[in-house]
Length: 140
Image (cartoon, rainbow, N blue to C red; front, side, top):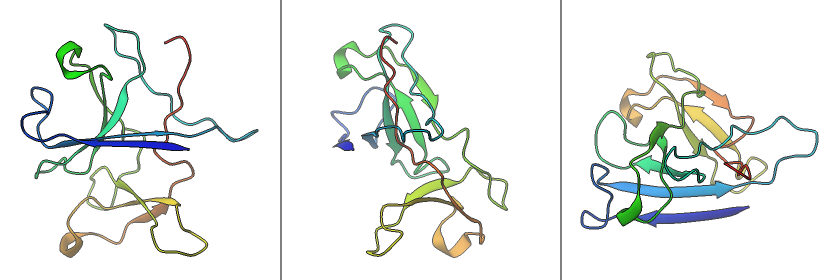
């Protein structure tokens, strides 16, 4: 598994995408297991997109989305939410995916929780069968 992370500051972020963190996780598919959601390709460049996370304060903070993977100067502006297959919590909001960091048998395992702040969260919890890993499909 490979994880690439890059934080954008105000001056380096793509236009219209301030306060973002790019996270790309590539996982090998499990033999005989269900396939992971496929990574979209931008229409202009036909290249696999990168998975990013909204960092800006607001309702979408923590949400994952796909964007063009090329450098800022040549990006085409492709955008697609990556969490449309995530479950909905008891508030009717799209859940956030988190990863267990505590050492133990569940370390590294992904799960879904309510997207609201800790004080306002409902008790929704669900293990994620497959994480936010991206499956690179050759020949986009």
